[in-house]
Image 1: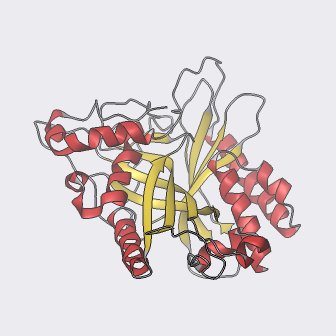
Image 2: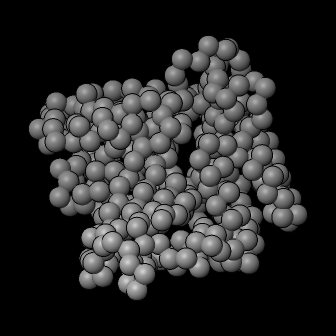
Length: 352
């Protein structure tokens, strides 16, 4: 339930010293997928994992076709519950229907686990329900104990320029899961989110740019948010944003080069407030805080009809897949942390 930089290779400490406090505060990545499980049980095989994947795809199509939100929610867990609820809420507000994509044949990465939680990763072509270009989905399925059903824990879309995942398999075809505190990586799995957050919050001014790839999912977030902050400043408003860790589980698998792919969940919180809060006056009402169009489907009719004047808050639940290189060798880094996939979306809007 913590995020620290205590295990970062010595060569990185000079670069990342200012980030240590940040990582401690972020509390990234909740419970690891290898932590303190005691119940022994046989994990899924490739064949069993394929049945789980196919069952989910079929059941989700049934739920969407019947507009059955309760059935759809029973098929997911963790952050996916929040994300799905928001999707249905926004669909109801806009009159659009939630859709179920079509999937091609998956590639399955199944860890050989003998304790709970049990989980695996499926990578499959994803085709939009109403046509369009295919993308590649990376989906995590898990169950926390024997009495639980398998559910979709998370899903991301790979970036178009994402490198091959290169998950390492043993002779039996099983993947190797990694512990929360694995030290053979550039960053422990529970540190990955904190490093991404540093670039989202501080952009090119973050010391982490030396060890984390810049791009749409790191410094790109910074520049887009900074641009909006500049835009509303002219209206005497202050806009701030912060990426933070969550308590949702993460998942890590060893890659052939000794690194890992890490799947995790973050939140992105945004707030807009007036520079000054003048006293309310019957003849001089407080100016309204603008609400961007993408947030409006998450607001009630009362909120839409009565403008926010004190503050407006928005939040997103976001999921990511990152390539975490092997630990530095001979004082030299073996590469940068690279965020290669993302999913999730807006999950909260409100204020006063």
